[in-house]
Length: 232
Image (cartoon, rainbow, N blue to C red; front, side, top):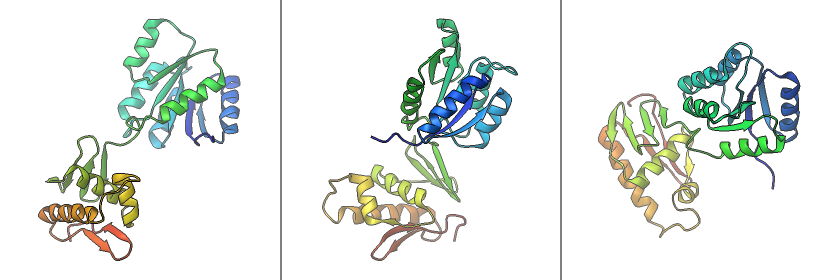
C-alpha cells in the first residue's frame, strides 16, 4: 500500500540528523521544509500549511517548549506536533504535553518509527481541520455543526448542515448530485427523493436569512452556492 504524501516541517539544529530525516522522508515522496532555528521555525509554521511539525526540544536560539507553545497559540489551524528529545524523564514529557505537544520520540530513534508516528498524527482530522469555515458572508462551525449568514443563525438539520458544508467547501463550483449522495450516505443512499427533500428544507432555511437565494440547482449536474461575497 502506498504511503500518503505528507507535508512536514522539521525544526532541528543537528544538521547531520536533519539531513538523515530529510533524505528518508523525501524517499517516501514527502515534502519537507526545514529550519535549524526555533524563531524561523515559528515563522514557517505560521505562514504555511503542514500535515505534521517535527520539533527538536533543544534548539540554539530558544527552548523547544517555547516554540511549541508559540506555534500552538498562534496557529489559525491546529497542526499535529511531534517533539524529538534526548530527555526521557516523565517531568520533561509532561511539560511538553502541557504546552501542546501531540507526541514524543526519544533520541536515538528509528527513522521508520518517526515516519509511522507522522502518518498516525496526520490521520487525526480533528487536529488539523479548521473548526470555522468562512466564505464571504457565510460561516460554518464544524464543531458546533452550526451556520450563520452575516452573523445571523441559519436553522439546519444535521444532514442539512452536511449538505451546506459540502457546498461551501466546493464554492464557487457546483457539487454533483452523486457526490452529495456519497458524502451523506456512502454506498447506501436512500430512495431517490430523499436528497431533494433535504435540499428543499435547506433552501428554505437559507431563504429565511438571505435577501436573495444563494442555493442554485444546476440542471443535470447538482447544486451550487452563489453570491456569498455580498447580500444580493
